[in-house]
Image (tube, rainbow, N blue to C red; front, side, top):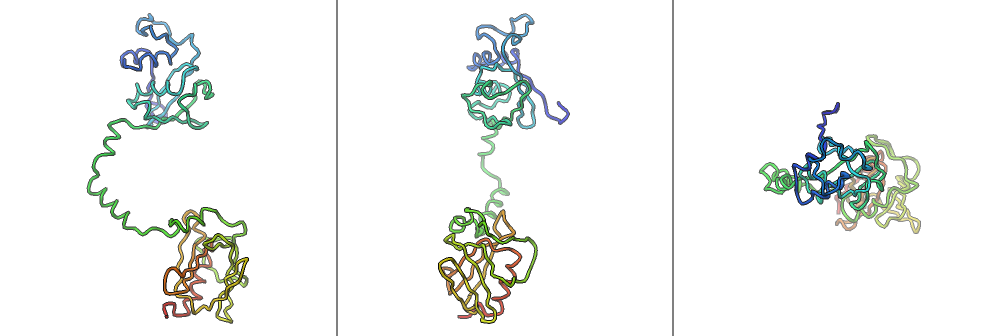
Amino acid sequence: MDSNGAAHQEVSGDQIAENRSGAEKAVLHAMGLPTGIDPENLQGEDPVSTASTVELKVTHNKQLMSVTIALDQTVKNLKEMLAVLTGIPADKQKLMWSKGPCPDDKTIEELGAKNGSKFMMVGSSEKEISNVQSKPDLSTLNALQQSSDKPEKLCEQTMHRKVIDKGMPSDVMPGILNEREALPPFPLSGMLNKRGSSVRLTFKLEMDQVWIGTKERTEKVQIGSIRNVISEPIVGHEEYHLLALQMGPTEASRYWLYWVPAQYVDAIKEIFSQFDLSAD
């Protein structure tokens, strides 16, 4: 084991000879050995001393393996060597390192790997896959049931995702999480409606009106005509909400606003709470 508690395992000619399989020749060649030579008969000579090879460090499930391989061998050859050590078939492995993924057809030299280069291997044995695919126990089923019973978040619904995924408007007002502020003396701007158009809210309290303004027009709405106000934080951007003003008896009449600064949401709701929002 190393200082981090990871177990070390090293692939050698002797080990591969003990694990002879259909991939024997590919593994011997990957180590820089002629495929017709048995590593047990090399009489103590270093089988890779004259070959152009590198020693790679491969981590899998906290196990650190040292693998010696010729530079002209491919990533697929490396996976075949790792299959001997881990029991995970080459086609079930995924190799990555600091420079990104490792395509099967790339040679070790083309990857730019050197002595000591570190790789991470992800993969599961057939036994592990079989265990995952087995019938879940009662506690798992209960957890799945509870998860399915949870209502879908507004921001995860398709109609809202289309707007949210476009990102914040460049002129969005700063949002502040876990703060409550009174409405400012100027319009709330930098928001979007469901069409993705810029929109602003102006509260004309002396007229009991809220003005919903876009580039095309300004709609003057009586505060008392708003039937309901709902809001929900935007996942990943909780300092902003999506908020709806329901102007009629059905959900279809909701006017959606996106990127409403969180610190003003309570103040907006309080404005409308002064009226009977459920009145017909």
